[in-house]
Image (tube, rainbow, N blue to C red; front, side, top):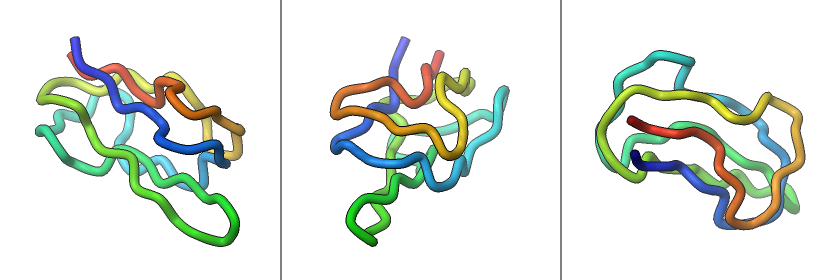
Length: 69
């Protein structure tokens, strides 16, 4: 099982991947917003997306945005 994790504290501005989507390593799963900057969150490996957050949610560094398996 792989994960897409937040690298910063921020707001989940946009979920690019949807529940059940197939992604490859490095695909953008979500976009975080912090201090007016948009930070992409990438899939840590190939597989099917299981989202763990919602748009508008505040996440901390290291939080799992999506499980990929």
